[in-house]
Image 1 (cartoon, rainbow, N blue to C red):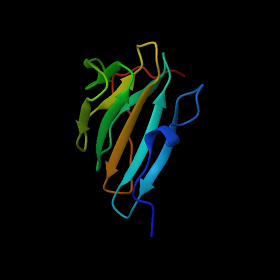
Image 2: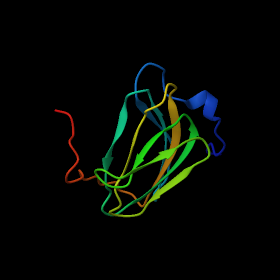
Image 3: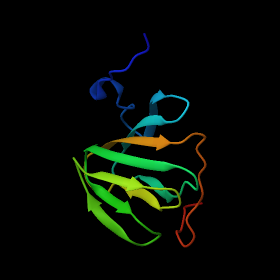
Length: 120
């Protein structure tokens, strides 16, 4: 039997850096668990053919809807991005952000956001 129940506290990526762990995948979706450390990003991006649904478990930050529009988010918030929607998060808080991301359908494609200034 394949594993179908997962414990977040046992799977959170290593402390000390922003990172992602693939929790589960199938033919149609992937589930990722992210740790975003203070001052770090999941840079704003789009998926031209994929939904990306985020559930924030811990921490607070700024969720980006465009290159410049953002909203404060925290534990319990769900952020939904359908194909073509800009989404990203900056950890503006003092503790790590931990969030789940569910992407579907596979394969995942990703595009940059015009007007957002990515670091070199």
